[in-house]
Image (cartoon, rainbow, N blue to C red; front, side):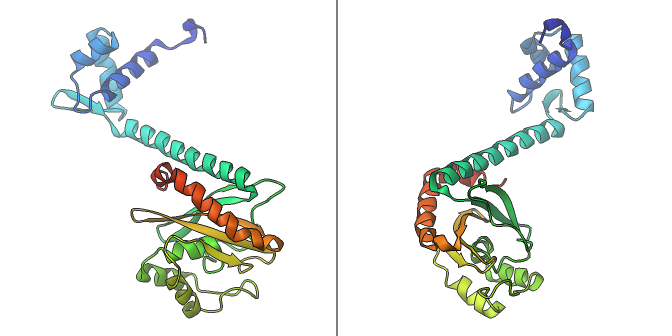
Length: 250
């Protein structure tokens, strides 16, 4: 971009914001003007404008980043976390040769947040709402197995067990027994319970109080690949667990 097309006041305001961001405990206008290379009257005018718009706040003569600037920062960080998860899923999809899913349990709901598949290996079609059918798919069973007893029963009160295929678990009691017997940190396997012709495995990921999972699916005629693929996915997750755990709050 040619220098003559740039808006000088915006450039100066951004330099001030960058200066404020470097001072966790705040800084006075004179110091910020000096660091940004601005005349003090110009700096005062811009600082007052930025404070009025919520990008800065002033306390006892010192300027700090305001809520509007922090929202921008938070949004950028969130997008970076989303990108981290999407890139990881894409790598695992390509290396293992299966569709890969990422889901969390948040605010009482099963939330499938990211899916990586290809035309040759498509994801399972969501023909029945994933949120309402957690009892029938590996993602839901994996997430529910990580919940406490009260949260688990509350979920089933809202989304009762119902048959989707001849292989779907038949009632709450049977499902709860299965969930309670799930071996901690081991893949959860589901065979044609959600959709005929598809088998799935989900690997649990827990960071703090957040329940999350990375899952994969295969056509049922490739069921012999399911557990080996799940073990391989689990190993891949283990190598990236640090950064992935930070991304669970996606």
